[in-house]
Structure formats: structure tokens, C-alpha cells
Length: 152
Image (cartoon, rainbow, N blue to C red):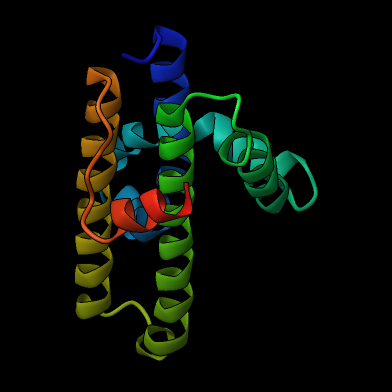
């Protein structure tokens, strides 16, 4: 059973992909300003990434080297750290593909619908991961969890 500090740090680690997934809700935040409340948990991560040059890259390496590859840290925390990093890498790849393939369409209805669907899907995944951390369980995401276990 992980400690309370391990659970809290596990929850904090999932705010990294959450901060990067908020870009998909930009048009929703403009149209419905009350939805901006979902950005609050990601504020510490956003501050770290924007206040330090190459902040997101440094945060990635700090978590990967400091937590994931450190055998003295509990398996629960290492698992959640690596899984959150893998989710974040997936979000970054989808974001780049989104910019490359869909930017010519501008702000059309299909683009807004697709980005809203991505935000809701990522919100569901991250909520599930946070809930599993609160319970002290490893979140089981198909594909991502298997890759995480193979790396640890």
C-alpha cells in the first residue's frame, strides 16, 4: 500500500499531461469561461514549464532520471511517473499532428469538435488515473500500462 505522500505525488505527476491537454480546449474556454476552472490543477505545472527556459524538457528529464530510473523510490510512484510521461508524449504527438494536418482548416466546426472530443477523452483518462492513485492502485490503461511495466 503506497504512502499518502506517494499518492499525492502520483496525482501531481498526472497534472503534467493535463497541462499539455488543455490546449485542445482553448475554444471552449473562450465560449464558456466558467469551464476555465478545470485549468486550476495544472497551474503549478504551467508555471514551472513557462518560468524556466526549456522548462517542459527539464521537467521531463528530472522526472525520468530522478523518479523513474531511481530504484530506491517505490514501484507505485515510478510506475505512475513513467505512465504520466508516456501519456504526455502521446499528447504532444497528437498535438503536433493536429497542427500539421488540421491547421489549414482554421477554426471550423469539425476542428472544434475534434479538439473538444480530445479534451474530454484526455480528461477521462487522467481522472481515471488520479482516482486510481487516490485508491492506491496502478491505473490500467491498455497499451500504455503494458509499455510502462516493460520499461520498469
